[in-house]
Length: 235
Ligand SMILES: C[S@@+](CC[C@H](N)C(=O)[O-])C[C@H]1O[C@@H](n2cnc3c(N)ncnc32)[C@H](O)[C@@H]1O
Image 1: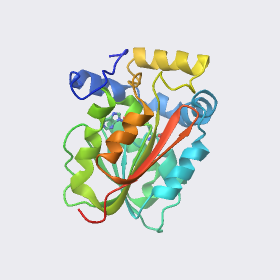
Image 2: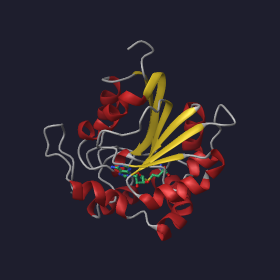
Image 3: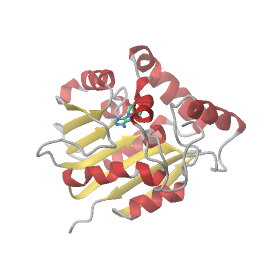
Image 4: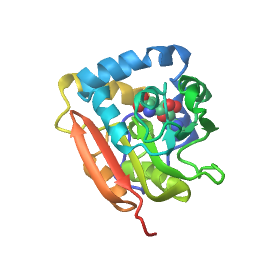
């Protein structure tokens, strides 16, 4: 898996083992250190995109009814400003420890949790969302960018017209912004199946979003792509 990512959808589909490898590392000790090490140190100094930058992205995008896929520790949901005092928040993750940790952290919002794989059709009942966040999710998912984009398709039944889909993801090794240090960490994380993004390119992310949504915006901070898009008002 580590060297990853054929260019297109024709590459072999991600296996269950690869999908589960991407979530297994998020156990309690890792989650306890995550905010400081991943969001505080590594994002800022290695990927060169601070958590403040990603938080500002959340603040611009979150809606009243929000779905977060891969919420991790819930740092962004805890800190961001929702456009209402009582947002309706749903958390989806394949890892139950992640769900329990993030739900506890934002218990004041009484979030709904779903254990589920973003690669599979979702079972979220009659829920509808004005925003969907997927911060630092895509670089964990196995497969090429077109294969990862099935995550966007799986959201379709649950999005309101005008809903925002947004997130950030570390780019693959072709991004010229990678330094010696970030390239080395990228290789290490890919060879241990924590990341699967060697071939992820910003133009492929833009293409997949543009094929499904409107108002696609792509920004880059260091080696991190910050993206957002909207569901067309009339579908
Ligand atoms: C790097 S963490 C990001 C956490 C948080 N969004 C942040 O930015 O701090 C990736 C998250 O995605 C989840 N995840 C990975 N693959 C998944 C999948 N196939 N389906 C659902 N969740 C997944 C992991 O369990 C973890 O919570």
